[in-house]
Image (cartoon, rainbow, N blue to C red; front, top):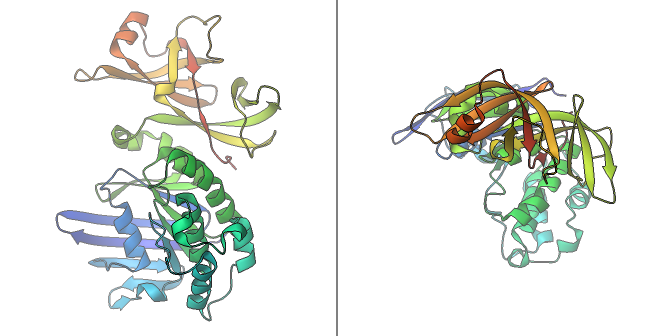
Length: 364
């Protein structure tokens, strides 16, 4: 792991919007730049890429200063590659032509990534002779990622590369992103407002709100932390649990996850194997509560839990619960009417019924 960092001390104003960011981001793994629309995520990436100039402040990649008082390295001279929401491929060139263009632009830059390796990792061989107009959205983004990597960057910047894709295309592209970035070992900043994408991909999270950093740290800590609770109004509240994949039931296509002594059964993941440590994203709306252990119901995952906090608001029909489950925590969102009917209170032992969860790539 590199000891270098991307050092940011930035102030930038565009109209009424002000972006003020101070952060030291390790040049290793994937850092998600996370926050609601209008929080400054894309503005930050454009400043790092050199497409915009900050009003004041400093940007440095390791020992290389890109922006400071009297210094501004233009975008084409920064060893950073930006992948946009739309692929922005050259329509008059084939896929092979687009990749060859990136190789020519790299010029004398150190060859960090061989074309053959990138083409194989992103499964582009069947696409090389096709034109961009014939590609699906997911295929086009794979080509855009390959083209960015062939410019031989030290840092990859991804600005919501799956924003324009439907669920099926996102599911297709996510494993390619995950596998490629980790196999090649290139540090990346990944802009997203999707909790599921962040949980799947990110090692750490830089959370923005209204142009300011509100949290930074390991993904599970930031997304689960109370310090970003205000952001959850803009997203689906939920929690992350770490566990160990115990075994697969090939006949039923289910996997068992050990959550510190309690078992969770989920549809079998495509890439994870028994013994792997996993992170699970469980949305608050997918957790129900019972005061007695249910019998003969379709929900298979019933966990022993205890209510840590119970928060209600007079102007809302909902109540938010934070639950302890083994060494982890869950969140549940119930109606206030349900809370009153069940006579729920803090400290009470209950059963958490988990209807569904999404797998992360693995916790370590």
